Length: 175
Image 1 (spheres, one colour):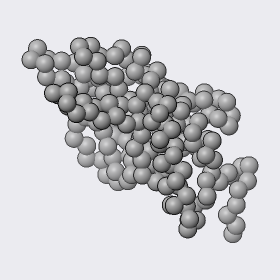
Image 2 (tube, rainbow, N blue to C red; image 1 turned 30 degrees about the vertical axis):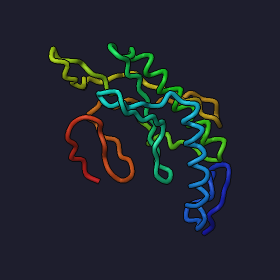
Image 3 (tube, rainbow, N blue to C red; image 1 turned 120 degrees about the horizontal axis):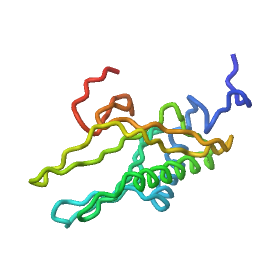
């Protein structure tokens, strides 16, 4: 039995099980994360008093990465179509960076959550949990076809790094 690259079954990167893959991917992924951070909208979180903030665009472990974007304005939320454009642009940047490095998005594993808030009269934020049927798209760098990435409700889980996560609610999904 032989494990090799071919047109029908391409090997992206150094190949499964290669002893030097972790070190090589560390150098490649940290560079890709830095470039993504420079080019993307990303996400900024600020403390309520405004004294501390942190900006990031991508977190990852080995080949499992999560991109984030937001636009917290002082008094109004960004319109959802605008936020989706930011997300789509950030996803396209990541897709293109992976392609340039010899990698590729595993599109069946891709999805996104929209966390949108309604505010009660006392100012308490409550996430809306309805389904956003909007999708974002990336242009596949090999086929030049537009690929849809589906939305999930804020309480629907996404499996990442071996466990199920959702931005809102208690999840009891099994592995």
